[in-house]
Length: 74
Image 1: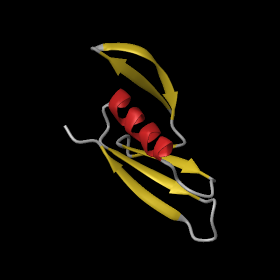
Image 2: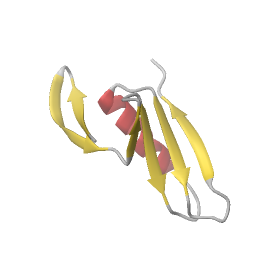
Image 3: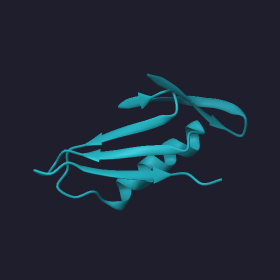
Image 4: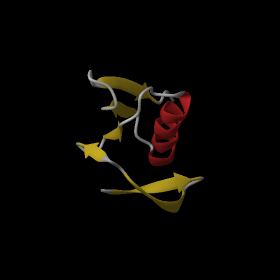
């Protein structure tokens, strides 16, 4: 689903989420050996740009699936 990206009350672009749950939770999918700070920053940037508060960062790059929550606080 395409999400509008807002800045200072104006739509400045669009972002296509990997998954969007209940029009409230962004799910970002990765397949990397190790989740890095840039992956968490990416989720936080998506949250700030869309106004949502929760992003689930899911990594399939290891035998055990890794799920991390990224929460935007106001």
